[in-house]
Length: 403
Image 1 (cartoon, rainbow, N blue to C red):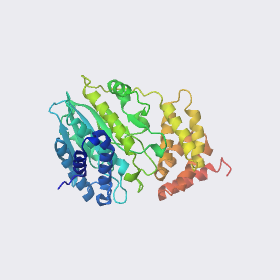
Image 2 (cartoon, rainbow, N blue to C red; image 1 turned 45 degrees about the vertical axis):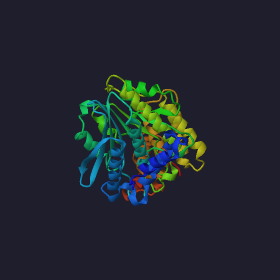
Image 3 (spheres, one colour; image 1 turned 135 degrees about the vertical axis):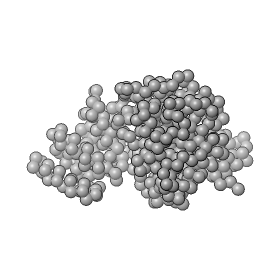
Image 4 (tube, rainbow, N blue to C red; image 1 turned 180 degrees about the vertical axis):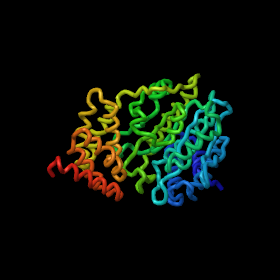
């Protein structure tokens, strides 16, 4: 009897015969994997818990079923990366996605069951593809507590880092930014490698948007590789309102779009593998064009599609439109990205509103915008220390502002 839900799907595909192509089955296969990983019995796949250990066993079985040379890499008590390899060349590409989640009551479907599902699809596709390099697939554990799985791997690589050409990392996939109508596959890392920038640029895909890593920060498993100056690409569909929440459920994943993005990422991996030379890592980043246009476009879409948007954000967006016009500074782009991420995940926005956005506008001599940011943070119900801090800041602003 098959333990693997993907193995059961394979039987169904064979039984159905020629009437069902592999590509047509891919969204269904993605769905089956995400639902299995997000099932309540996995308890949110909290690192170190029984659900995460069951997931690691499942992924090892899947890697071996696909034909990878695979095993566990212990990273701590009850925690392990799952590492599989295709090919026997020393030179290799890493494709990674973290499998741990947010814990009981939070299914963690987009973050990051969907990324793991894509990882398995890529392994399935590449297992039968002759390449001049090896491909190492890693399902990282303990990302949510500080990128611990990827940090451990970089410090204790199973395969020498000097033979690693590129790291491709997948995280938070299958839902559009803030669940807007517009679908975007966001790519980070091209600013550090002209070769990788050229590979992604050749796709000529209007749904792909390049953005500088500095606008997002070290938020996923690409960061330890970047710190070692290893060329990397990070693929994501970005955060949504249920990010790290109870509503990150498998039924909200857009499997048709996830399937399409998996095909795009597959093509990138194939093109990188066939470059004929190792991608280089720039000392000074060359940031993508059109970042300001991307951020401005999101502002317009949010205002158009979210009539319930808080007035504080409408005030912030009005200021950001001005700052993003023409040739905006890097500081303006950072501010816009911070505000947009706060608007996308209101439950998690108290900290950036209180300690980054509000203080910025105070320093800029815009107390009315600072007050709006502080009040928005206070409305979320922050922790006691932040609530006390916000009270002090608002009291100080009352001196210069009427109510």
